[in-house]
Image (tube, rainbow, N blue to C red; front, side):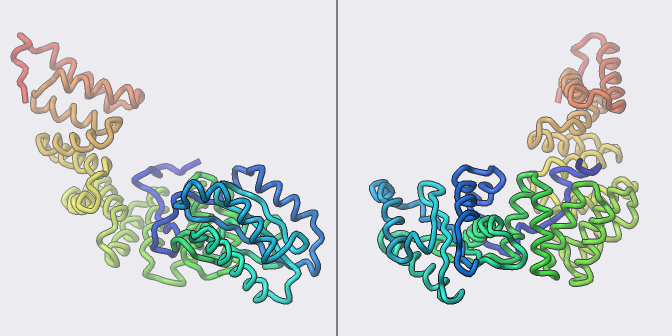
Length: 405
């Protein structure tokens, strides 16, 4: 269950990884959670195979999607022929994962370097035969405490890692691979799987701030605030100027309703980087709650400059202006928020109130107020505003006395 005040706009900060390259269009690790037949079948085959020395490499391979249709028809045959040329069925197994992707395991090599050379040779021959770049993720067994089945998953996670670097990349599984797969599971709301990968990644890279922070975020969204705080404080001991971690600690205090401490942490974050939307938005929100409207507004203006598609920033600005008895300006802010998010109940009610104060378009104000109640039927403030508008309309005689904007 997500903690109070956690929303799309007010949320814990985390990086998708320590990479700055655009993420891939699709993730192979989705196959792990969906438990596709081909992947399960490959794991079962690998589990039952007798491997000399119990050492092997596992690799996931994907050809570029720009292969012409005529060549796609021969991909499987070409791969099988190339596999048998470089290896053979006595030293490896493979499975077709999709139109352009495969997973393989091979063994009986003198050492890891020799196995890696064979992997590169297979990649190059396939690439040459089909005139296409190939993406590869590689995992070895034994490594750390991973089982054979987990090694297959690791090869899947490694190709997602490779995809961050673009076509024709080969990556060996490591802690960053687990950070990326954990982020993917997090994005798809599979928080337990994400937490597992972050914890395992930290066994490999104990001082990785991204992994530590991401683990803290997983605890935070689960409502385990003390565990979250422990991880964020651990990260700060490694780098006291890591903005996302400082912000996250501030959000923990916000959730606990300790506004003063939350503001303190957010101001620390802002002193390091004053162009982070989430920092500006939350700081403006907290100062508003403290009644410090003049201090809050500049932060919301900055948030809007950074991202003018945020309904929350315009909504908060509208609430402050309405509280400061500037209904005309408040109405403009609420209007912007509604255009961005027509289901923003607070902005609908706020906009209705602004029109009521100015005696403008009261029939429109009535409609907006009703919509806000439809979205939040138990909100007493919204109900009071609706009643006031109704009373004002009923008291106007004749109706044409109602002003228009």
